[in-house]
Length: 288
Image (cartoon, rainbow, N blue to C red; front, side, top):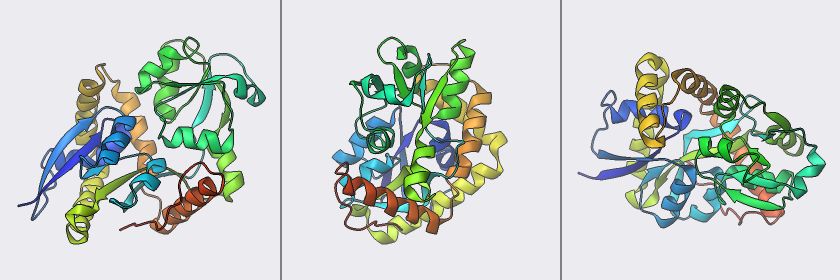
C-alpha cells in the first residue's frame, strides 16, 4: 500500500485541517499517511523544492519553482479576502511608508509570499533579515531589524501586546494588493501534492483532506487543544490557547474561499509577479 509523506506546518491555521487525519478521526482508504511536523514555512519551501515530501503547505510564491512537480489542492489555498489577515508591516516606533526603503526588513525566508508581496508592492529595503520563527521575529524587532511583515497577524499583534510592545502599523499588503488586483483574493499559502504519486491518488488525498478539514471546523473543541500541544512542542514555547483559537478562526475564512475566486487570485498574483520580474512564469496553474 502506498504511503504518502505529509509535511504539516506547525502553524495553528495551516495545521488544523491535518489534525483529524493525524489523530485517526478521519481515515484514508487505500493508502497510508506518514506525518512530519515542520516548524517553519521556509523549511517547508526548501523541502518541496528538494521533493523530499509528498504533501505540504508551501508559500504561494514557491509554486512557480515547483509547478512541474506538484499539484495544488483547490480546496486548500489560503487566500486573504479582507484586512483581517492582511499582512501588515509593523514597527515598534512610528514610521512612514516612504521610510521603508532605508529599513532593515524582517521576514520568514527568501521564498515566502510575505517577501514576494513586499517586493511587488513596496520594493525597497536597506537590509533583509531572515528569522524563521514567528516569535523570534518579535524579539528581533527594534534590534536586528526595523520592520516586519506580520504573516500571522493576529498571533503577532497578540504576542507583542502581551510583551508590552505597542505595534505601529505602517501599511498592509492587503490594502495595496486590493488596489492593483481589483480586489482579487491575495494568495498566501497552499497545500500541494506530488505529481509522482499520480493524479488518481492525489484526488483521493484531496477528498480525505477535505473531510478532515470539515471535521476539524465542526469539532474545534477537540482540535484546538491538540493544535496547542503540537505547536508548543514544535516551537519550544508554551502556546496560549486563546491566540491559537483566534488564529484558527481567521484561517478558516482563508481556507474556505470559493475555488473560482482562489483561481482568480492565483492567476492575478502570478501574472503580476511575472510581469514585474519577481517570480518565474507559471505555465499552467495545475490545480485539482
